Length: 400
Image (tube, rainbow, N blue to C red; front, side, top):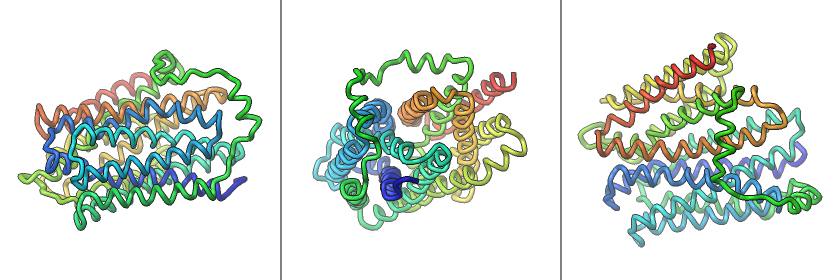
C-alpha cells in the first residue's frame, strides 16, 4: 500500500465503529425494558433506526468525500460519533430519561457511522488494482473483529459497572480514532480530482428510488441484490429480540455479560465461516450450492433458536445460524461483484450496501413488532420462514 499509516488509521476507524456498535448492542434491550419501560416494538425501532440513518447518509458522506476529501469527512464523522455516544451516556446514566431522546441518540450515531463509505474510499485510493482485493479483505476483517470483541466488552462492563460505563468507553475509543484522523491520516484523494468533482453538480438524494429499482430489476445481477436484502433482513430480526429472549426470567435468564458472550460467539463463528468454510465449500460444491446451503442453515438456526432451553442448545442454534448467514450473505455479495461490469462496480456495490442498511432497519422493527404482538418465538420462526422462501427463490433464479 502507498500509505501504511493512512491504511492503519482507516482500518482502526472501521474497527472502532463496529466495536462501539457491538459494545452498545447487548445493552439496548435490557436498558429499554428495565429503565425506560418501553415495549418490544419500540425497542426494535431503536435498534433499527441506526441502520436507517446509515442508509440515508451513506451516499451523502461518500459524495462529500469525493468533493472535499476523505480526511475531513472521516474526522468530522468521528467527532460526531463522540458526541452521539456522550449523549447516549446521558440516557444510560439516568440524567436524561427520555424515550424520544434515546431514539434520537441512536439515529445520530447512525448518521455518523455512515463514514464507512469514505473509509472504504481511502483503501481504494491508496491500493493498486492488484492490492484491491487484499485491501477489501482487511476491511472485512476489521468489521468482523469489531463485532467479535464489542459485545463481550459491553456485556462485561455493563454487568460490573452499570449501563453508562460501556458508552463512555466507546466515546473514548472514538476520541482515539478522532485524534489519529487529525494527526496521522493523510488525504488520499488528489487535489485535482477534488476540484473537478466540486465543479460537477450533484444531487444528494438518498431517496432516489429509481436507481434502486433499476438495479433490482437488472436481469444480470438484480437477483443477487434481492438475495442479499432478504438474507440481511431475516438475520437482523434477532437484533434486539435475541437479547430479550436470552434475558427472560422464565427462560435462559442470562445477565448482560452472558448475553455479550453469546453475541461475540456469533461473531466468531461468522468470522471462521468467512475465512475458512466459505472457500472450502465454494471449491467442493460451487458458489450457487454454497449460497443455497447457507439459506437452509440460516432457516434451521433461526427456526430452532426460539426453542433453546439451555445455553448449549442456544450456542448450537447460533452456530448454525451464523454459519448459514455467513455463507449466504458473503456468497451473494461475491456473486454480485462477479456479474457487474468494472465500470459499474462502485455504484452497484454501493447500492447493495445501502439496501443492506435498509434491511437492517426493517429487520429489528419487524422482530420487535412480532415479538410484542405474537410472542417471543415468532421473530425467529418468521425469520426462518423468510429464509426458506429465499431458498426457493434462489434455487429458481440461480439454477435455471
